Image: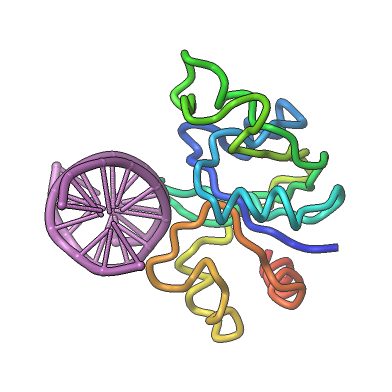
Length: 150
DNA sequence: GCCAACGTTGGC
DNA sequence: GCCAACGTTGGC
């Protein structure tokens, strides 16, 4: 059992959207490192922090769970999608994704600002300077500690 | 909207 | 394989 943090811009897809839809294919990831985490290291049942990025109150807004094995991201084959990738083929797809299912919305957003104030979380990937990965692993100790903040 | 900190692309 | 130019992410 591993733990993850996955970023989404709430204007595009928020924790409330996931709550309403129950389950969502995490499409549009176009970063190789993030793809590799989904393709190689995620397992059904892994825990996910749903993180709101690029918004007024960036932070962890909810909990989710990996709900499928990795499979090709359909949007890469769709010429009308902004995620279309002409360099990818169905025979040899470049981009993979997993489904994510809703677990709960946190009672409050645990903000980035707050996370920065906890010395125990100083080595978290999320807080490392310049980090832009939209999918990243979370240590079990960090997971537990952050759950305790809610 | 600005811009630092990346990652990717493509000429050579 | 180097690296300059370009594009993107995401906090502020």
